Amino acid sequence: MSLPLAISANSRHAQQMTFDTIILGAGAAGLMCAAHCGGRVLVIDHAKAPGEKIRISGGGRCNFTNMYAGPGNFLSQNPHFCKSALARYTQWDFVDLVGRHGIAWHEKTLGQLFCDGSSKQIIQMLLTEMERVGAELWVRTEVKALRKTETRFTLEVDREGQRVSLTCANLVLATGGKSIPKMGATGLAYDIARQFGLSLTETRAALVPFTFSDGKFKDLSGVSLPARLSNDRTHFDEALLFTHRGLSGPSVLQLSSYWREGEAIRVNLIPDIPLFDLLRDQRHNGGRKALTTELARHLPARLVDYLSQRIPMIGNLADQSDAALSDLTAALSNWHLTPSGTEGYRTAEVTLGGIDTDDLSSKTMEARDVPGLYAIGEAMDVTGWLGGYNFQWAWSSGHAAGSAIAGR
Image (cartoon, helix red, strand yellow):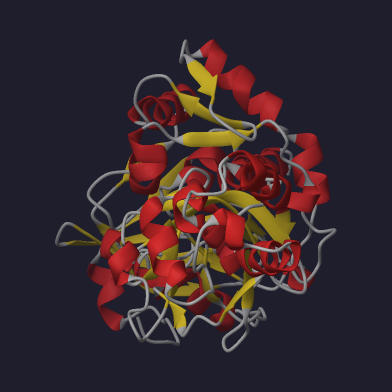
């Protein structure tokens, strides 16, 4: 959608409706906000159904929050911005809401909480909360034009072929970022932010697999193992998955949020294995075994075969000196790789960056210089780690904005 957005001359012929609050985006943040605004509320989304990212998340079971969610699990140019909202609506507040709706859940790993059943239960819970307060939902509805008068916003939308003119005192941007465009992700929130003079930080794909242009890992596609991935700023100890395009898995997705183009990463294939001691002990007990055979007891056999063509692994265990075993262990624990890029927004779980938090109130999510304009969720420059953190930010920021609007 090109800018500036302006109400067309045809708007005077459109059906006109008035609301207290209009929320653009029926995702996690938008639905949560709608349940707390009070007054007459309308949620608009161009998709066929609400909560599509919720539906596909967590393999269909929705990793809806994390037991350990806190400010340190989020990236932003202002790391303090998220503290207020996260403190006022915590993961345990959302767990309580889930419990009140009778949704069974379980912890998987690293504090990640999932539905026992379907992610659709979370969507239905949010819709029920919306219906309880009388909020309306329009899907298959696209914003065609937008402007602000001194006290209100005026929107022209296309609702399944019908042109409708809307006005509201409060407008909430909850359309997310650019990740997963096949599900309808657009830069609408950024366009509107620019229209009203809000700044944007650099945006890029995050929680996304790394790619390698030479197809160097295609023969390892499907191999996975626990690993530590790191760069000069951070590290993550989680599963690593080799793919025909490059590297994926939780450790890779986590590190991608901290990675820059052209930067090398370090891969430790044995973070929790005292490999030097194990090989040295086995050298005395089974020295006739091939070194690669013994390594395959600790690492996937296909990976050992791949690495043996790049790292010296010739001979039996009995042939290996302590120095040789030390060199091998060092190579396996400090493998330097330089990705050619990432898979981009096509598969990225989130967008890093967005509406600059310097232009927003950390307590209310309202734009400092545009009364009545709010931004929540992924639309702003707050990005969580993999593992339910981004959903928690959706709940916390949506609650903050909704509560602020209700209290006006």
